[in-house]
Image (cartoon, rainbow, N blue to C red; front, side):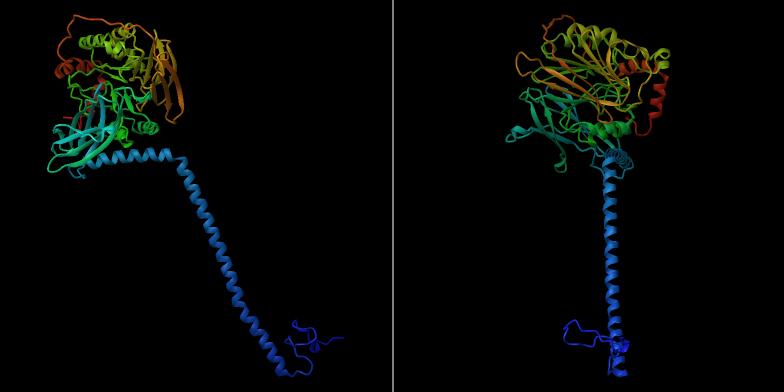
Length: 537
């Protein structure tokens, strides 16, 4: 039987040679050797404990750091997902905040003089001219505009004469200049510079021009109306507009109260230029009842050299003809001008003939009480009773209107009528008329993309692709319109145009504007409420 004190295990080094490896005393060992072995064993055991503890601690710390990294990566991934999910909302509110903030900083005088307050806006003036409008925050120094066709860089640019500002108040100095004549199509670059004490570049942008046909390339436009006080909605729509668009159509009511300088900054110019649209896309503009100027000065929109509020122009070597009317003015001068224009050579030889007028001839949705009891049914009634017969006689293809705050598209006697008043103003949901002519209706905010596609041969006609989109960018309506083959109706008239130009500002203010106020007390209250310190003077 083995005795505990006599057992000595063999060493792993050699089976033949026994080595004392146990701390227990073997045969012949005295107490000292036994104690020495035991102490050596305990020392070795104790010396190994810190190493084991350190190794375990490092392993735990590594696992903790790894878990933290995984949590951080997961949190970042979740954050990026939510940013992507709500990127449109974030961008809209950021634009809203910046537009409002910029205007507040300018109004409070926290921006030094000589800074561009309103970015330049382009407006089509006629077939060969574009008007550029911009505003400095203060100062009365003369400025100048130069422009050049990009394909003619070797030629010196054309430079305007010095432009004097129109000082609206101490923080609004307005400038207007005409670019042209632009006889050739293509890309143009314009520069706005100060003159004294030295030249300084204020703005530089490019735009596309289609006075002539451009290698069978389509002409793309975006159309909208009645954004008024709906800034967030308007910003949402503008964010959806494709950068390939070359022109903008606005069918009126850009602001709620025309005299308000603040509204022109925050509700119209600010949003359009925030996305780089107003500076680079010439606007086809028809005035509405809310942005009608009773003094006929129209500071922030197009002004014709002839002083007429109505105008016409051609595109693509005359293939497209636009006629812009003013539904605020029930005047014989406009009727006579329209008849002459529609019967003229330019209109009758155009493949596509488009009219833009704010108040639609066939309005169906409005406030019932205002429509039936407050006389608003008579607003622009002459558009239907006098203009529509001319449209039908002389072969108008398309009429674009706003005023009614929703969307409708239909045909009447061979003419396409569209209402696109859903860019931000409160929507109209109640029907007051039913003409039974509209094929598509949407009681929602929207904008429209138009693409004029040139004919590829003499046998194929021009086409217009019309697509309507809602706030989410979803297409809610589309139609393709082919240009009609027809015989031009040319008439010569011996009747003289009544008066020179249109009408004077005093006449408009006395008759048209006051008549609107008499028939609409609510409009008068809105204008009185809006006449604050920031109004146009």
